Image (cartoon, rainbow, N blue to C red; front, side):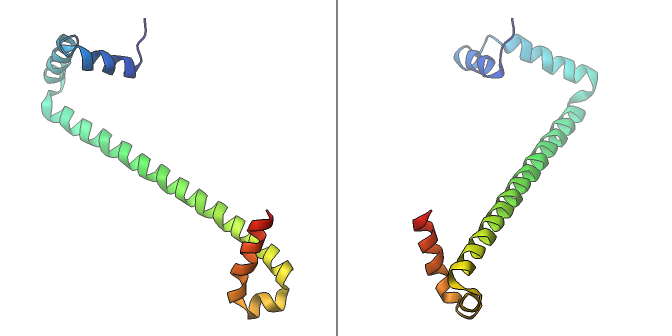
Length: 107
């Protein structure tokens, strides 16, 4: 049958000696094939790649949130401008927040 990673970790945490022979086999194969140095370098490179991808994904999400927020704020400012009038909107910026708050209560 197939096991999920979570199931394997659960078994390993409850019975640590169960997978010991497999771990030892893995270590021996790694040493016999390319050596510890190569595998350590490969693990570090893989870790760095994964971290970089996570950072890029976080940056994409932050940009997406900022764009959505900017679009919402622009929409809200259009509604505030309609309620205040163009002249008041540009000449009295301190009153914009009060109008935004009124719009929030309505919506």
